[in-house]
Length: 175
Image: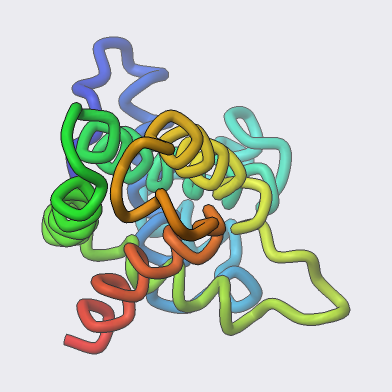
């Protein structure tokens, strides 16, 4: 699913296949409806083999989110941390999101499913995995106080991140 590094050992290939299968299934069905048996079947291994790599479904889900959101964070950070005015960098960040989703279409569905599943009974895993993204946005804002867009207003990192995400994720997931 996307641009994962080419694994070299058999163990790395198996782990990568498990992550790719789980990413697809979590995007299609959501966390609650996906079973480890489903992932094992898609990979062509036994369920016990998955537990060798991932303690349980939650650990596997966290690994999927870490992979997907790590890719997204790297692309977005590259767009936002170049020199220049904030406006064009935000546009570049939206383009980076669109490009990332284009190469990894499961990303938008995973994000939407995670947001939809959030509630008082379950802390969204997304919160744990997006913290580095919001911290990076905060650093970008703090480092550019001389930017005209920031001179007269205080921009909340959550608001800026939501603008970038809203400009791409929900539109692309609907396609």
